[in-house]
Length: 380
Ligand SMILES: Cc1cc2nc3c(=O)[nH]c(=O)nc-3n(C[C@H](O)[C@H](O)[C@H](O)COP(=O)(O)OP(=O)(O)OC[C@H]3O[C@@H](n4cnc5c(N)ncnc54)[C@H](O)[C@@H]3O)c2cc1C
Image 1 (cartoon, protein in one colour):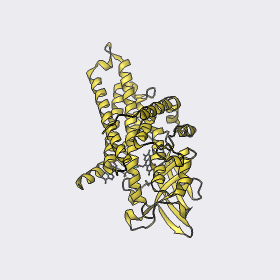
Image 2: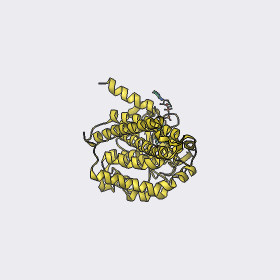
Image 3: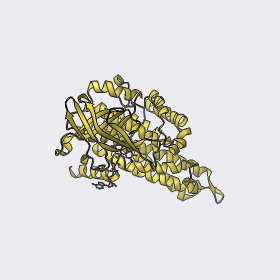
Image 4: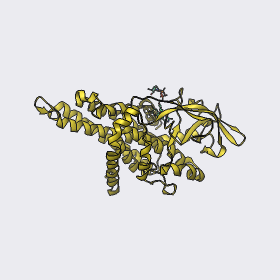
C-alpha cells in the first residue's frame, strides 16, 4: 500500500485549504451563532467542484477519486465541520444514492444540477421512532394510478428545509421488512411535502437540520430510485461510502482542533514558560497527532478499497468508529490545553468540542458501527 499523495492530491489539498481559510474561516462564528446555512457559499463550492466531487464529468461533476473526496471533506472540516457535514450529506448521501442507483434520465435531471451546485441535496432515512433501527420506518409509499403517494415524516434531515432534491426511503410493501422498502426522489415544492421543525442543535449549527413531512405527497412513477423493494439494501451500500466521508470529516475536525491546541500551547505561558514545555501538554499533543494519523490511514484504506470497486462495509465502519471517537478525544484535549479560554467563544476550541459529538451519532452511532464490525468478524 502506498499512501503518498500524488502531486495532484497535494495541489487539491492546498487549493481546498486556501478556499476554506479565505471563504469560510472569517464567517465560522457568525454562521454558528445564527444557525445560518451559507447558501451564498454554494456557488463558490461548486466552482471548485465540491458540489459534485465524485460525480462523473458527463453529469457536471469533478470525477475525483474516493481518496480525493476524503481530502476535500477533511480540509473543509478542519475549518468548519458544519459546512463539511452539509457537503457530506449533499455529496455522500443524496448525490451518491442517485449516482449509484439512478437511471440515465434521473441522473441528467437530478444529479447534474446537484453536481453543478444549482441544487442542494437532502437524504431522508431517519424517523422520530426509527434511527438505528432504520428498517422500522413508518413512512409509506403506495401506488395510485400513475403516481406514488407518500405519507409520513422524516426526522433530523440535513438540508430538510433548504434542500431542493431529496432522496426519501419509504415502505412500499409492509410485512416484507428490509425487502419492502424503496427509495424515491422528491423535489422541493412538490405538493404535500413540507419542511417541519428546524432543530436547535448543540453543534454543527450552520448545517440545516429539520423534519420533513409528507401528507398525500404525489410523485410521478419515474421518481422511484432503484428497484422497488431494494431501497434499504441500496441504502446500506450508500452508507458504506458515506461513512468514509464522516470518517474524513472526523479526521479534518481533529486536525483543526490539534493545530489550534498546538498553536495555543506555544504561545500561552505559565510559571514563566510556554505551556508546551510541560510534559503533560506534550503528551496530549503527541497522542492527538498519533491518533489523527491512525484515523487518516484507516479512512484512506477504506477509500482506496472503495476506489477499487470493493464493498467496504467492515473497513468503512472501522474508519468511522475510530476516527469519530479519536476526534472526540482530540477536541476535548484541545479545550483542556486552552484552559479557561477553551470554554469561551473567542477561541475555536469550544466549537470543535460541540461539533464533534455528532460524528459518533450520525450515519450510524458508535454502537451500531461496533455491531456491524462484530457481525462481519463473526461471519468469517
Ligand atoms: C445533526 C444531525 C444530522 C443528521 N442528518 C441525517 C440525514 O441527513 N439523514 C438521515 O436520514 N438521518 C440523519 N440524522 C440521523 C442520525 O443518523 C440518527 O440520529 C442516528 O442514526 C441515531 O438514531 P437515533 O437518533 O434514532 O438514535 P437511536 O437509534 O434511538 O439510538 C439511541 C441510543 O441507543 C443505541 N442503540 C440503538 N440500537 C442499538 C443496538 N441494537 N445495540 C446497541 N445500542 C443501540 C444507540 O447507539 C444510541 O446510543 C442526523 C442526525 C443529526 C443529529
